[in-house]
Image (cartoon, rainbow, N blue to C red):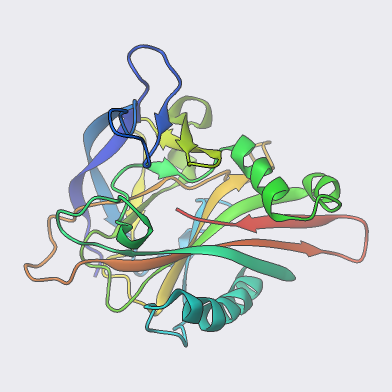
Length: 288
């Protein structure tokens, strides 16, 4: 039975001084980690269990599926790469129609109450409405992860960024993942580019600004046998398909006392497919 919930989601507002928004999780002592303003709002989130098939990558910006992973421990990065990557490549190919998928990164998140997201071993669920890549950052990813000789051809075709996310160890009852239906998003007004600063480079994400029209969804008690694909970028800009799917972890007030803290994994991969004739679709599958 579906179980809607009301909660507070954290949105973004730009810095009051008009400066460029940034997040620098490795900021040196004395420098703020970010300069944007957190903007909490109460929203309703609809449980879509039983009607998951209504939400697809090209209409809503996300798509649920069910397939149990063969790898189940997720404790060792080398084992994850050796065992979970190949089966996930096969899954992505079957679901998206891709002919080649190259996973280049992953993040395991294990919520520790009171812990901050201060390093690769302490990655926590992200409690802010966001999108992992802007269009400019998406193009930069193509340049960064593919041979330079292939980039011009690939950028001339349709490309996307998509995340593959699933719970691990147990159902994600604690701090589940909410997704915003793209059909309720105003692309020009609701999205705030935020510089993501690393020690050796800079990326760019979208922070999401509040809009009362947003339609938030989740799959209550999502299990490790279930997964969701989340579109983070789309090169088709004519309005015919969803361009992205904002998402956030959230505190579900209906979570039973004693529920185990949320654990999840997200994969980031490059993927594309080509037809025999001279056109194709290039997909980049990444985070959130």
